Amino acid sequence: MKEKLGYKEFVTIMALIVSITALSIDMMLPALPDIGGDLGINHPNDAQLVVSSLLFGFGIGQLIFGPLSDCFGRKPIIFTGILIFVLGCFMSVVSTRFELMLAGRFIQGIGASGPRTAIIALVRDLYGGRAMARIMSVIMAVFIFVPAVAPALGQIILVVANWRAIFYILILQSLLTLTWFCIRQPETLHKQDRLPFSLKRILKGFFDVVTNRISVGYTLAAGFMSGGLFAYLNSAQQVFQGVYGLGKEFPVYMAFLSLSLGGASFLNSRIVMRLGMRTLSWRAVTLFVFTGIIYLVVTITQDGHSPLWFMMTCFFISFFCMGIIFGNQNAIAMEPLSHVAGVGAALVGCVSSLLSSFMGMIVGRFFDGTTTPLGIGFVIMGLLTASAMYWADMSPKRL
Image 1 (cartoon, one colour):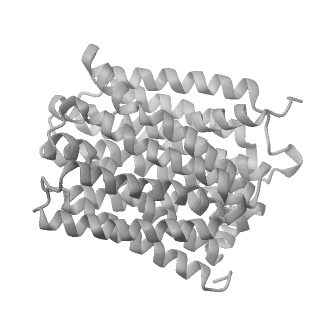
Image 2 (cartoon, helix red, strand yellow):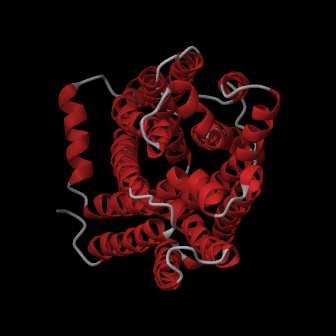
């Protein structure tokens, strides 16, 4: 039997696997205009679908991989998912039509959902409660540091090659990470603990999840808060390059905001054991809404073109709040689901991912050459997050 991994190596491998999704989004952002030009899109906002199609596949795939991870273990699901992701990358590389590109991105999302779901279940196998929140926060901190440099890496690739080369880099990173994982990480779901594949059992697991108010409420909260992040990702290239005219410098500004997310996640891992998940989540969402309202008011008075320094300051604070919230919300949603960790991770991940990608796509489609739609989206997502948390915390555990 393999020796249990040390804390640092465990966190690093988990973060690299989870970062596959973020890399496949952030590295593409500088290339969206080139992809749209080469593949003949009809409207500039259509390029955002390169991001949205992956996120929809990512959400749907979790419903498939989650139950399977309870039947076959965590490692086979991670292995299979990454190989499907690589297949989707090859489809995007050879695409000559925008529809084929979107199909490849959808398959990439389905593949990336396997590792994401299995990783959460794997961590839940080993940790619970505040300890799980601590581990997830550290994973999030490391995971965010990697894509913080992804837009800059994508920009560098575009200098020496075309946008198709970005997919080759994603393939290489995925296969190297998969090799490290397969060699070093033991299986955490032992054979005697695996559940037989049964539609009745899967439906029973789904019932246990959807009738638990804490899990449902914090799943919705995670979806709404992530909706704010995906709204930003969908619009980032147009905001930084179109509104503020930053040209090739915009990856630096994105990295700055990403590091705010990562720094907050790391801080959360240091203080969550002392202050608790709910206390930190409520403080963060309150600050998020307050900051969003201030930003929106100033932006409207500036006809949708607030100063860059002001936008970056408000977004830095908002992203810091997101970093505090993300690890805690997922841990709270998963806490009552130890008996159905795979199904639980699937449903929590699927609902939050589909909700966030849908919300992010809607806000992104309203982009009108100003940052006002994004400001409105942040405020609405913050208020919806707080409402879902209140509904979960102030109600009985069971629906």
